[in-house]
Image (cartoon, rainbow, N blue to C red; front, side, top):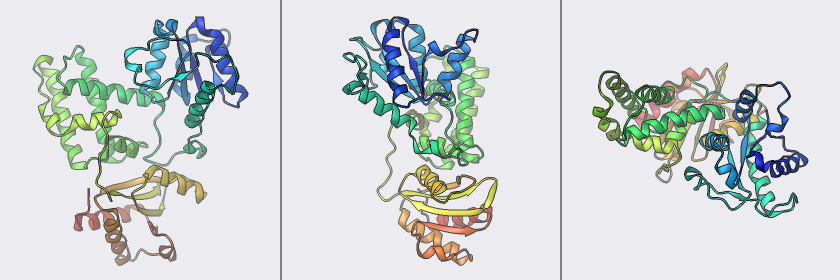
Length: 367
């Protein structure tokens, strides 16, 4: 798996080689199409490599902007959130890439101390030095989808957004497939049965599960209507009323999630294939970071995953309610005196989930 895929127009191969050479000299595993071995399938190699790369540098120039291949690779990287664009001449970027901040390499001549190259290198390192990459494997619920999976998710969500905005449906089969994909995203959150379920829920802004159940039903109705009716008479008002459009825009990063001050998440950490070590955590901080940090610091053989989670309006109050209820049920340990945000349990996580759920519902702490 390569760190960096470099996309460029053939006329700019000299600059592309400079980028690859400079990054390689700095210890980065940089790749460009000149590394494709003789006899290999060109298109398949490109597709495989860009799909597995940690980031994609697109060298924008006047000729690159005119290249369908470069624009296709740039679109893929943008959708997959792995794009690092760099301008190598004074060109006007394609419409949907003008909002992305570019590195300026227009005056770069290969000097590693050049400000533009340093900026490029810093952005590459931030992409490839994600602390999660050091774990080797991922916890259940928080396994990051590969770039091509994010691309598939984002593509489907974009189609549904256009439907909810009342735009014309020009391809009914594509629309039905997108609705099914989005319905699957909501269902994986409801069922908590996939390796990325919490990551997906987080991108939606952690909406209530009751809302998701209604949205799934409405999506099924919309898809059935598309099967039976003319696309021009499809009514998506029910989905809009349920707040689906807002959730879609959050997923795409175009709408921010506003949560009350003091709110947070109560969640249960365990390993799906080793469920007897359970940690119940209440926090205002990033849940994924905490899970990964505990896996790393405790030297866990199997990474901790998010088995269940509950958004709460007041994390301090919720923590008291949950931890007290666990104590009443006989779940305590000497570590409780030194861990303020975490309760360590020696039980199957299936025993902990109903206790935590009941405590939060009884105290009306759910957010």
